[in-house]
Image (cartoon, rainbow, N blue to C red):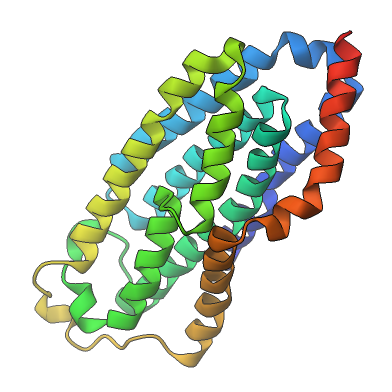
Length: 253
């Protein structure tokens, strides 16, 4: 679980950060030529990752594929090469780190108690572990992009920024299917694991302990805070994003 959290929260961002911070400024001409392909890979990430997540029966694999899908939004926003799209992509990198880290921790808590990740083995966990279910619901809804939680803001910025660029407008429209698919597999998972009748073998499961509260409370606070007040991060990144966008636009002239 710890390695999964580090991978999702930190290491996955190294690729998109490297492209945005190193590749774009060094190769501005090639970047402009390949923008459509960057958007295409973003769209494939979003749709294929969501479809792969929907097909999983292993809880951790489902979260892993959903993580891939959500990183596609970063690529799509970067392909816009405008302030709104790139700000959305950078914010999505951060939000993905907090939301997906929380999702992997959620799987770890359940696996630690049951020693299985098979979604078909569960059901009715909300009855036995109500506080845990509350944290799960926040994380799932943030991953879906529910307004008021951090995932909504970054995805909205990505789509608004990318839709304004005629070259990748069709890719952006197709990519919105990722929101529908994401809601599908997340709500389906919520229903299979936490709703319905509780299996007798899980009658002895305990709810969260103090160590798990320490993990979940700060991540939940960040997700809600940035959903309500995204300017806390956007204001910090605006100057550097504007500078990079101007450089990229000037290089095309």
